[in-house]
Length: 330
Length: 288
Image (cartoon, rainbow over all chains, first blue to last red; front, side, top):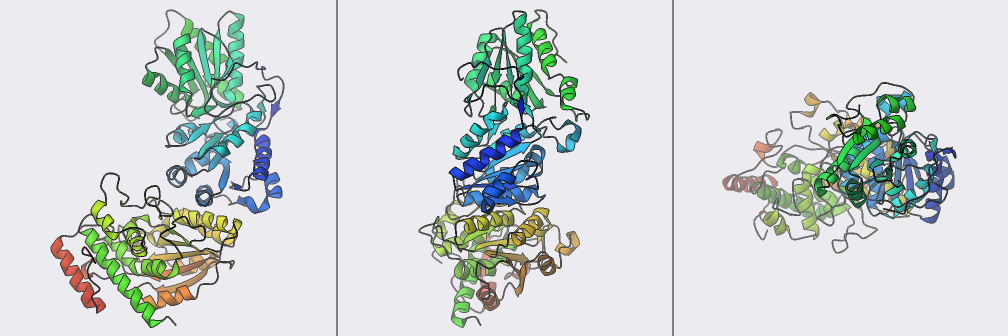
């Protein structure tokens, strides 16, 4: 676990993760001639026009054809390129699932897949365009690294670190305009959770853009003397099992928070971890329940499904109640 | 016109491949029908078209081959053995055993020289597009050759890649279609019509060559007639073939899409092949 860090409450502003990604990729490709970028008719949406202008010979728009996107990326990687293939999370993980699994993960190729509109971040777009199960299905592929950054500025580091990894990487983003959480220049490392706040009564483990909600809940609980540790589990695979085990042993209670179906993603990974390691602790998993969500603004959907800051706070209080119900918080 | 001595050599190789395939089908259940329909194609590709070096499977300038119809792995293994990638006897000795390099579908992780692991249909052409783009970026002029089954043309991803190969002007791509007009459940056009295959590829902007996939002289001519890899249109060679070609009871039927034969049947198959091809180039037996 990295050193505890002073974290803002998100009031310092927001930044579009796609803009950060596009700029990071241009710089990476300038430094490394083997970097190529592919998109499936989302050049404008995913802020790749700068890449096309800077490195036109290394930019490939394959049209609305996500299976082809992944197959072509595979072929480029077979011959020494490091492709960054970008599309919506739902299509990267579902439409092209088999190409990702068979053509990229099976041969262990260094294709870096970036999926946007993870979870209900694209709320009004509805379930057809929402990556609800991407963390889960990507996590199941042997050799796949799965990342969901919590702060858009971390993407610059993650893009570079993903490039350096020899195998495939999946990077999951939201819709954009995500809050800045960390001070500028904060360092992050794939596979190492960040202890965003310390606490000994309970641990909230969040991934992706839910960190802001976890911190808001922890802040309110702290005002009442409840010490909530917050772990920013930006890397869902490989999971930082040391950080999870320590959290379970030291706080005895864990709440996981993800903008993802509550099955298969971070919560499942943490449950597997504490089971495998025999960590004696309680666990409550927050996320999208086992249903296809209604349409709505993301913030209202997070509240509706009980995994925004108020839902997290409620879950923690229930966990801390001595005569707790046998059931979960919602 | 194809050089007669070359054609005769290749015909001998194709006959040998059929025998070796049948011998393998006497060891294990094999996709023998499709293996036999592609035997002449694979012989022409590996023994005449492809520039590869078995001593240097990663040689950058090599031609790339992606077996899109990955269930034709038997024919690929034997083609590779014939080129010297490994001893053909290793196939018979280890096929399907725990940790073997040889299974029903080819795996690049375990068998150097296999360009790409395949088996799930409809994937090979997209991968070929990526390989061709990489070659262009690196200034290489190698070809990217793929062999696709006609049943596989039902997969939508094939047509995504067909579009892309033309759009990106990838003249280094040469796609062979093993058009045996059969899939697992019956005649291709009864199950899901793909004809006319040639017109479809032409409509997508490809150069199209149609050929009898069992006429070695015609295959050599088609290969000789390929434009340089630097041309800007991909080429498809639509090869009319017969599923099970060479063994009467396996021809034109789905029964032998995959299957296993006994030793007596194997001997009869060898005899029929020698009779039909008017020569004997040994058998698939040990030492052949």
